[in-house]
Structures are given as C-alpha cells and as structure tokens.
Length: 395
Length: 144
Ligand SMILES: Cc1ncc(COP(=O)(O)O)c(C=O)c1O
Image (cartoon, rainbow over all chains, first blue to last red; front, top):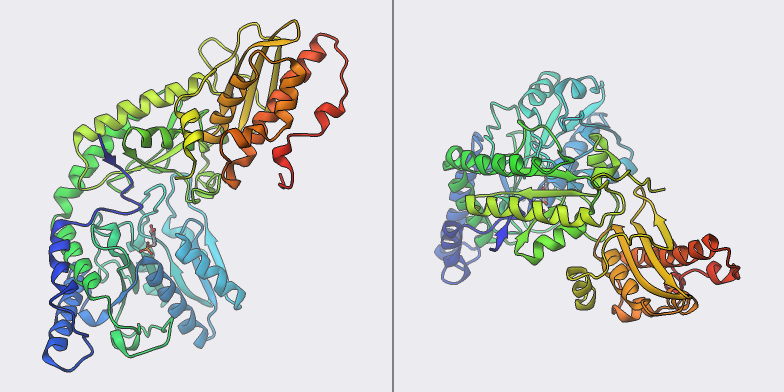
C-alpha cells in the first residue's frame, strides 16, 4: 500500500489549487506589468491572491504580503532586512534558536561574518524554547528575534505569541518561520505580535517554488536581488503567476478546514504514536502535546534509521530520517542531541509526518510495518541486547 | 537511488544474519558514536571457513557488504579469505558504494580481518602481522 508519510518534506498539490492554477499556464499568460487589459487582469488576480493570503493570516492589508520563491527566500529576506534596519540604528545583535531551518541559520552565519552578533538559544529537553530564555538574552543592541513557529524535525510548537509580546514591548523586530505551521496551527500576525513571517506554498498543498513574506506595515524590506519594480520594489522579476494563484488557493483551503483537518490528522498521529511506543526500547522525541498535528519523531534503540527507511520504502512507505541532515551525511542530528536523545537511540530515528491524505488504514500499515522491521533489524543488531543475552558493549 | 541494484539486492535479501553459535573467531569493528558497528563470526575446520555470520548496527551498505562477504568466504581457506578482505573485490562485486557510505564497507572488511586474527590468536597460530596491517584496499586514498 503506497503510504506517503513525509508531509514535512513536501505535500501533494491539492485539486483545488491545481484547478486554480491551470488557466494561468495557457489562456491567462499576459505579463502583470503590462498596461493592456490582458496584463491588468493578471495583476488584479495577483492582488486578489494577496488579499486572500492577508486574510488567512489576519494581516491588516494585502500590501503587507510579498510573494517569493519559497520559504527559503522569505527567511533570507526577513532576516537580512531586519538586520539591516537594526544596523542603521546601531543595533547589531540577533537572537534565534539553534534548531531553526538552514534558511535562517545559514543566513545568520553570513550576517555574523558581516559583523553581526548572533545568540542561538537551545531548546529545553522537550524541544521547546521558552519565552523567558529569549527575553533574558535580549540586550540594548538587539535588533531582531527570529524563532520558528514549529520545528520541522521534531514538530514542537514554540510559544511565538509570548515571544512576540516580549519583542513588541521592547521594540525589537520579531520574525517567525511559520513554514511548518501554516495550515495546521492558527496564524494571526496581529494578535501574535508578529512583524515578519515566512510561508512556503508546498508545505500546505500548494505548488513548490512559491512563498510568502509578510512584513508588517512600516517595515522596509531590502531586496535580495536587483531588477524591475515588481512586488512594490521588494522582489524584482516577472511574477510566477500560477504559483502565486496556487499558493493562495491552497492556503485558503487549508485555513478554512484547519480545525477539522488538524483534528483528523492529530487522531492519526496519536494512533501511530501509541502503536509505535508499544515497541520495546522506543522513545518519542519532543513534547507529546505541543507538537504539530502530523509530526511523529521517534527513535528505536540499537538499529540504524537508514536501514529502516529503505526497508519501509521497499514496501511503499515514504518516511524520512529524524535528523535535519541530508541523506548524504550520516552525522547524527544536532537537534536530537540538544534535546538529550541518548546516543544508542539517535541513529534509529524516524520522522513520520502525516497529512491531509493519510488514512486510518495507512496508519495501521505504518504501525505493523515498522513493528516488524524494527524487530527484524534488532534480531541481528550488533548493539541491541537480545532476550537473555548480556548487552555486548561496543567500543 | 542512493544505492545500486546489487547493493539493494543484498540489503533486501541478506544472507548469514545473526551470530554463529560456537564460532571459532569473532571480529568486531566500529563504534556507535562515529559509525557502524560490525561483528563478524567465523567457524573454521582444518583451516577452511565452514560458516560465517554477522551482526550489524548500520545502514544498507553495511548489511549488503556483510551479506556478500560472509557468503563469499565460505569454503575458502583463511589465507584466501584474508586476501579477499584485503582486495577491492567487495567494491567490485557490489558495483561501487556511494562515497559517503564507503566507510561501512571498509568496516566489514576490517571485521573479517579481525575475526581471522582472533581465530589465529585463540589457537596459538602465528601469522605475519603485515597481513593484517595493510588494511582494506577499499581504503586506498580515502581519509577515514
Ligand atoms: C521550517 C522550514 N523553513 C523553511 C523551509 C524552506 O522552504 P522552501 O522549501 O519553500 O524553500 C522549510 C522546508 O524545507 C522548513 O521546513
């Protein structure tokens, strides 16, 4: 049974989003910057999409929405813009967390080389960065706080509204990478005191290569590349029209159904979690309550995650390894280490991320397949203690 | 695909998994901290390997290598098996490993060397340490 359970990596394009996009591949092809009516029609449609996105996150107007090429670009532009705004006022300190996506972390590394001072806060053992840890790191020269809404690896939800409130009170810009949260957790940029927010279309059943950067009115974004005056001078280049239309349609659909859908996915998640925790010597990583509805990050002692993933793949189940590292690196995840996952467990970590199109049948299939494969791999593991056998200590 | 068909075939249908009871030599290589852990067992009769098995903490490259090598050494003399461990045979037979997983294959070869050495030591058989010192030729030029 083909079971796609890697929805944190990407999601299937929704039928509605696809239908909305199709006309923009052929009939509606004019350039939105053209002044003829065919062009202006496209411009209007983009602006409607902008309003749709603004409404979905409760922005005060579509003018606060910039369409980008994805979560990565939005993160880069948000962090760099805020850093430059800070530097203009002599503030060159940035606070973030050690488990942000590389789109944020690598941008911070670049800024560090350019003379910014960066403080990265580690999450607590439950995978959550408490607001107090952020507020006690704030200094006179802090320009920006960037904390993700939900972590892509362990799915833990961060107290962004509290962090936003702290930042607002101190006059510090607050950016949140809401790429994993959108469509699953409520987003209200006004109530949550968010100044800058990143979204990625393909994580909520929209097209790949589409993103949004929300910037509260009055926050001047810096361009990452130079060119024409598109997107109010914030993002040059002829718009990727089908992607913009698809993203807005997908976001609208996700947000309209957020309660029922999250509940349904959460039920599947909890079923899989309890099924898998019945396997001996297994642990769930990250807070069990404050986690994304679809995220299961789970470790099995004494086996290697790669073998597990490939054997699951062989029977049609697509999941990912638990670490943020790419498939060419076998370095254990720094996230898992930082939340205290023991060495004997780290390598045997799976990230199973469920979504809209998963079924109860698939949940059962995941549980029975993982259970069988874990016990098979343990039967000839060199480090897992078998029944009645002393654990042989590997060097 | 990360791995070629030969490796996947051995990985999906491995032979000789598990410890060998009353084995005559055991070799263990690796560490949970920095890579795979391979334990390789041999049973020896009049200088000939009669059976072999392995336990592994590792990915597809480790399992496929151990499956291939434990099968290939059956019926071989200890010195032929040692030559096999020291040659590039494993890499060739399995059609080449991704660079990031070569270390797993090297560990398996080293585990076989260690098992043979362990057999010699257990039985007071002398050997030329140089036979074990040259390392696995897979490792030529790699920086592990
Ligand atoms: C938390 C987070 N931020 C940013 C990104 C990057 O988004 P995109 O793939 O649209 O560039 C991802 C997705 O990989 C993510 O999970």
